[in-house]
Length: 143
Image 1 (cartoon, rainbow, N blue to C red):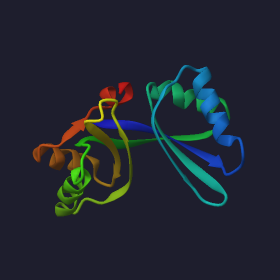
Image 2 (image 1 turned 90 degrees about the vertical axis):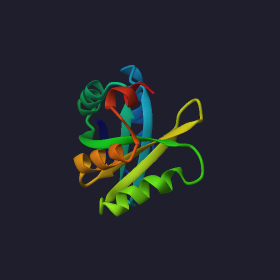
Image 3 (image 1 turned 45 degrees about the vertical axis):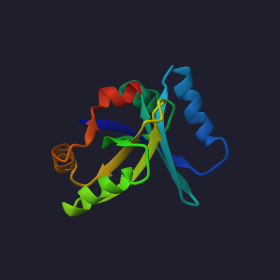
C-alpha cells in the first residue's frame, strides 16, 4: 500500500527544472503528480512517475541528486470536507503528517492525496480500518 516517490534536489536557478522534465520526457517517463518546494538556494522536487526505477536511474545518470521516499496515496471524495475527514482520523491516532500534495483524477469524482507520514504502516492500518481507500503504488503510477 506504499507508493515510491522520487525526490530531486535542485539548485534554485533558471532552467534546472526544465532539465529534469526534459530528461524524463526523453526516457518516456510520465509524471503522474509533483510537488516543488523551494528556498532561496535550492528546491526539492517530489515526483510520482509511471516508472520509478527508470526515472531514478535516468535522473542519477543526468547528474541530479535523487532519493526515494515511501509515501501513501489516499483516495478522497472531491468535495468540501473530504480532506478534513482524513485529517481527523490521523489526528485522533496522533499520526503526524510531514507533508502532502494532491491531484484530481480525470473523472473529477475523487482526489488522490499523497502523504509523507512518520508512521506509514500505522497510518495505512488506521485509514483502512476507517474505510478510507489507500491505493497501492501500482495503481497510482498508472493514474
